Image (cartoon, rainbow over all chains, first blue to last red):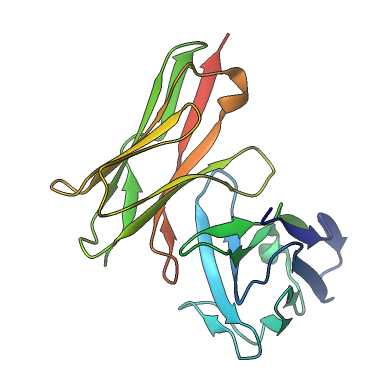
Length: 115
Length: 109
């Protein structure tokens, strides 16, 4: 149980375009979902926390107009990278707060390459 | 600010040996800790968790030890296998979770 999926798993886009990444909790309701960014050989960096039906809370230094997060239902959150640039290329991972206190279940990640 | 960090960035062990991965935390108010395993190109996987009212918790081949006096957390993996090769992260809390850089475990055949 407690499976999270992400789509797409890989995406290549041109600079200036927007990319949407979906995060779904498949067998549980995630009232809170988290979005992380990870650079090669580095730790996870929390970008934002989103609660279903309300605006996301962004970490300091994360541009909310660039990284649009929507958490419309208890099983779906989306991250849209707007006007992507090569420096946005990274591994993006989402997680959902699971049925047990404190446990986050992670998606498999989405690798974004902006040319 | 408060942070969660790891003592060693890399660890290499022989297949069949036991592995110990350490983590130091600085937020003495933290009451919940989790260990995650991340294989190359994949998202982190939950391994085991522990609450601050415990000092030891065992799972299948894994044991987490918590020493609140020195704010230290460790993950022990028994009879390490090649499939255990990954980066291991410790994390504290859930609504303000922070990860350390991770320890890369390499298992030699």
